[in-house]
Image 1 (tube, one colour):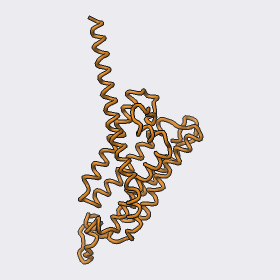
Image 2 (cartoon, helix red, strand yellow):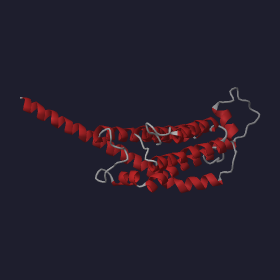
Image 3 (cartoon, helix red, strand yellow):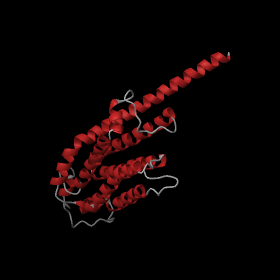
Length: 248
């Protein structure tokens, strides 16, 4: 991200956060506004990284800010989807857990085993070919991240339009007054049939394979980072035993 000690502030990174928060405000009842703000926030991620590399102003703070913003925005969207599609809530909860755990474990393993100056994107092919391709090929990285978010945005739009996923949308009961206008039932009724489902379905079907690939990469990342840390623990234990023997 764009940040150096004497350079300009990371306005792109901060703008992403402002747009993401604004999208969350509109998320319950305004699908078009929310989708636009959320999409622009995600696109600024790619612009931010490109600008940082072009101006040679990449920093560790910027890299962490980008990752934290990505994880938080995706998690917030998945939380909404879990409430919009309660029968699938365990799937969305699992996706949040996998996303958070794999990136935290990968970042921690990189710092603990590779040193504080090592970037989490520097993955050697000997460790993992798929992670090396994912982190070093900018096209692959962009497409995986972008289409992963696009799939979840499509599901979000379908929560306003598709009775196949939300049978409750078929049940129009306008005469029932909810005591709490922000209750789950009231919000579902307010979302009912706000938009046509054709385009969101097409987007969801097209982006689904890439979303699944992204989850596979998350699993690989989690497993590889765990093994790397475990190997480091074993090596440290061997060193301690050697030192104890030398001391004797």
